[in-house]
Image 1 (tube, rainbow, N blue to C red):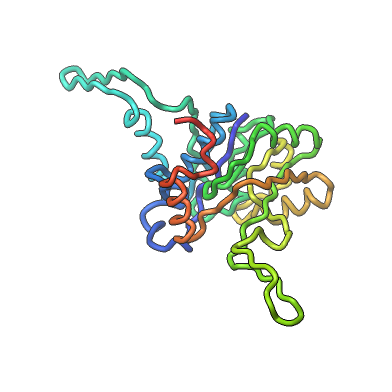
Image 2: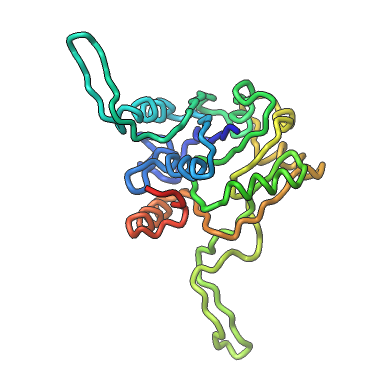
Length: 259
């Protein structure tokens, strides 16, 4: 099953970080965040990726074109123009990098992958967030649902401490950055049937999170897989610092694979 990765946005809230590279190429522990996402899927046996590129797509292409040689022992014979690869330390990935346009919205980017996906189910997620989602359980839940799309629902951590205040104004409980107010939000990590391509309007302004998902929900074709584990987007510089700190301390919950 192919895995589509949305990697074409501008990531303007990260300021200078995205002036030279697209958001999915911002590093956690020396590796692009998209690499971390791909390692998660690889852990569960999914190694065929389609990266939906846009803004600064050349940075993503250069990284993966050079990834093989950068992670192998290489002998270059300049006399006869030969290159020998001796020891390959790379993952067993098949990576298709599809340029979907600089200004295309998420739905448009997804629909442009239709030719590469064919008439097969596929997985889909955003290239700017990490989680410890059990992909095998997610796929099983999707298959049992019988619906066209399964969305991983998450409850993000609140950004402020929560207080329980008694009538006399004394505080009975304080909880630093608890899980949100009970609402479940779209955490990405979708599983889709090929029919969903027909739900996406033509044109670069089609937004996956609007008409397609709203219509699927109205028709009873959108399933939720509730994930109560770790999930963290990289939207701001603060997010980047937090994720890098977890990685440096060897406390990264999304690292489910072995070195």
